[in-house]
Image (cartoon, rainbow, N blue to C red; front, side, top):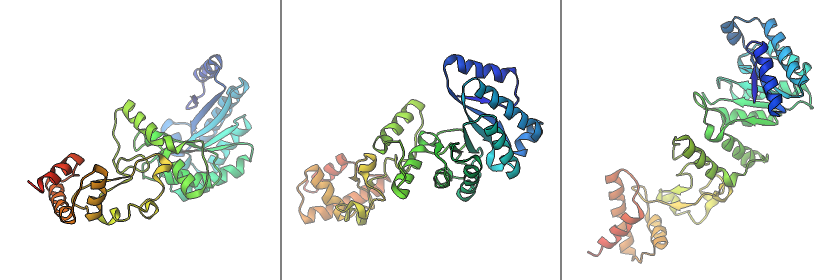
Length: 308
């Protein structure tokens, strides 16, 4: 849960008191710290620092473990950023989050800012990273944050969120595990099931080529790739077993003779070499005609028609 410190008042105190009554022991306390945000609100830097101190100390005094969240961190003046986070920690914040509110930071910039924050707050204050995907860099930025010392990544399933969404926790976990050897608490073998469930409940669709959870991730239409289907490491960036996905050959205008042979064996079709060549020609023609994939049922019909 979180308390927003856009203006410290009795309302903020009431929010914290409500958290305590509910038995909540940890909360985010957030405030804007970029000059762009402060100017839009008509609040000076010094006034915001005082609000940060009051809100964090009040919550900490009530026994709430506070994570300070500086809104628009990546567009804040570096010196004021340092002052705001120092004020929060001095007031009792036990954790802090570096926040790329508008998704404008490059991975290199995130690494630099997170690294600076880790050094400033010391080893006893965990640093989080909260990123958005407005430039398509949220996953890369999150990985860079971890490499720079962030202990927590804030994000969502499927990257859902306002505007271009947030860092996709599933993609971040996959990249950290498979490319950097950094383990997480997420079970990648459940990632696709969780992604599908969230989509069902939320009522939206994802691109079929979406990393990790996309429908086409381990499906192969290309005939050149089908000829290597028996050797998964030669055609897959990571094992389908890692994310509990099914490997499959699909047929269409890009299929080759090995595609036909694999599918025929899968469906129990008994074909001669001439049949395989004729069926491949028929599959390519059907795929081009419908501008899509040829289904198993259509393949069986085409195979029967070879001898009609």
